[in-house]
Image (cartoon, rainbow, N blue to C red):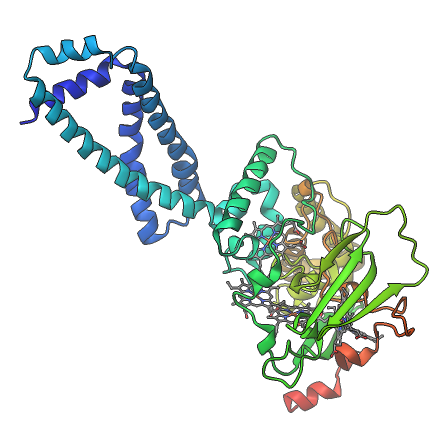
Length: 470
Ligand code: HEC
Ligand code: HEC
Ligand code: HEC
Ligand code: HEC
Ligand code: HEC
């Protein structure tokens, strides 16, 4: 059955070098890729190594094979496809039968190949949208962002949900800028550290508001901060704030508090002169159509490049997921998690000194942080080094982790490379005494505007006794 057709088909492929090599490549790549993409779609393969092998190794190879095959057909117009060759091949058999059978075989093979390729392209596309692709492939480049992300509240939100968001046009834009990044990655010309703000980032309102709706926020938020002092007892101190997170105003009578800035009734534009949007020179508030301009007194902007931006979520939440801590905060977190024992004298102070030294590589840091902490106890508490070896080792591990999660010398990321605007640093870019409107009013800095301070660096704050009922 279909013998004549097969013979024609085989001869066609054998005689044409391009088609021949193309076919071999397709036979070798399409079946394993198809199986892998089905497995990946059903069981979600997590291993980056396998994904890279199939989607970044075999997949391009398959495309190469397909291209060779097409080239083969194209140039065979002059060689194989030429009338003489075909008529020679067909001569010996029944012409109509050969043509019919060949057409049948070609369409079956083509259908199978297309279905397989559909499945493969679909999975490969999903792979390029995955956290493994964004965070792990460009290993050295994105490790800092990826590491910070894995410990953040958004660790289960895919990179693309914030960086690209829904819709076809952003999809195309992201793939185009992705190509540029791949070139930079391969040629090692990417900037270190990767600069922020990302000027091409999609407006946060379109991405964050897929999940969060400040118009529906209600009430305030209690924030309790625990810190450990650099004294002998590593004294634990509490700061308690009632953050007036307010609302963008949907259920409340009107927008108020911190999320007033993103209410539908409010638009805030600001002008800035530096790359990092840290130096703001003019703020315009439009509330219910009513416009007020605040100008920085004595600011000369002639000759400087001035850019305008509409304020959105990431003017405050610039680090919703790539949260790099200060050395103090990073250590406090390790204390809170119980990773650094609090009964070692001066451990906060020593660990802080150890992790803020300058190291050229993470490897060097790992060795020297341990040496630094051991040397301190060797000198000042030699008995402790023997009696509490385990605790000291644990503390060294905790301090090293605090460093490893926040400092990446190979990307020039050190402590405080990326400022967090969800703090006075961010708010006081506008809320300071220097901005005045035409009536001489400033953007207020009143301590109770954004929060009530219920306790500040206290050992046993009364408010906590009340709250905890102790
Ligand atoms: C919750 C939203 C969110 C998620 C999820 C997210 N990012 Fe980001 N990312 C941001 C924001 C916001 C910025 C800072 C934007 C700015 O200031 O312009 C940023 C900045 C970056 C930067 C620039 C360097 C820097 O640290 O500022 C890189 C690189 C980056 N992200 C990579 C990733 C990767 C890789 C993933 C997934 C592993 C990811 N992002 C997931 C919101 C997100
Ligand atoms: C795909 C959904 C999704 C997107 C998109 C998203 N978030 Fe979130 N976000 C969450 C979830 C879920 C939580 C709660 C995590 C938890 O409580 O552990 C959260 C928590 C938060 C928190 C509270 C964090 C804390 O410390 O408790 C803030 C602030 C926040 N998101 C801001 C943002 C900003 C800003 C953006 C846009 C750049 C954004 N989110 C985009 C899902 C999302
Ligand atoms: C003016 C600065 C500012 C802007 C703009 C802003 N936020 Fe916030 N947001 C804050 C502050 C401050 C907090 C309280 C953080 C804390 O101390 O835990 C907060 C808290 C939150 C929380 C946590 C609420 C809770 O109850 O735990 C979410 C979610 C959030 N913001 C999302 C957003 C989104 C989405 C946008 C943009 C539509 C936005 N914010 C715009 C400053 C801002
Ligand atoms: C880009 C400039 C800008 C930044 C950055 C900014 N604000 Fe504002 N904020 C304003 C302006 C303008 C007003 C209105 C002042 C007025 O009307 O007098 C305002 C008003 C407020 C109000 C009062 C809202 C009301 O009417 O109830 C709060 C609360 C507030 N800001 C909190 C914050 C916090 C917290 C941050 C930092 C996380 C912050 N702002 C960062 C510009 C800014
Ligand atoms: C424009 C808004 C705004 C104003 C005005 C403001 N703060 Fe804050 N404050 C914040 C934000 C935002 C945080 C960070 C909250 C967080 O980390 O969750 C903060 C945190 C703090 C903290 C805790 C810091 C820490 O990490 O231990 C203290 C203390 C504090 N503020 C004191 C003050 C005092 C005193 C004033 C008056 C001079 C003031 N604030 C005015 C927004 C404001």
